[in-house]
Image 1: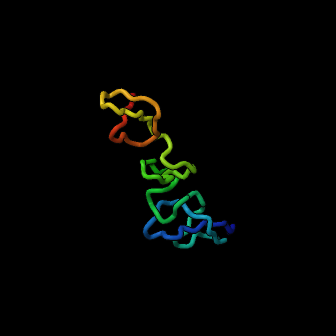
Image 2: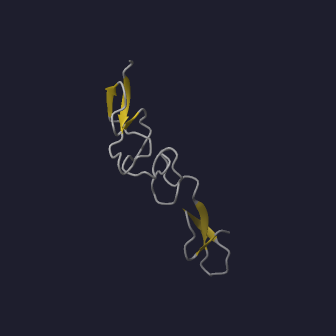
Image 3: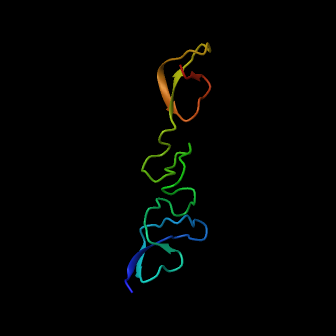
Length: 102
């Protein structure tokens, strides 16, 4: 039987997403709480893993080293409230008071 390197799921009971951390053990069969990969960037949160869906929360939900990637829009200052903005703009996941999309 061939021995294989298995990566730890530090918190397998609460995470259990099938993606392991960088902690590893050499074994013939995976011990409880271990998988054969180290792809999880937050092994304490089941929603954060390479298959995670990016949401606006300042976290890297899909383990691509980018937080909230693809979720930002440009919003422009609307000082007079007419619905038309001017520079400067801000990048944000959601529109805030005093800003507009155009």
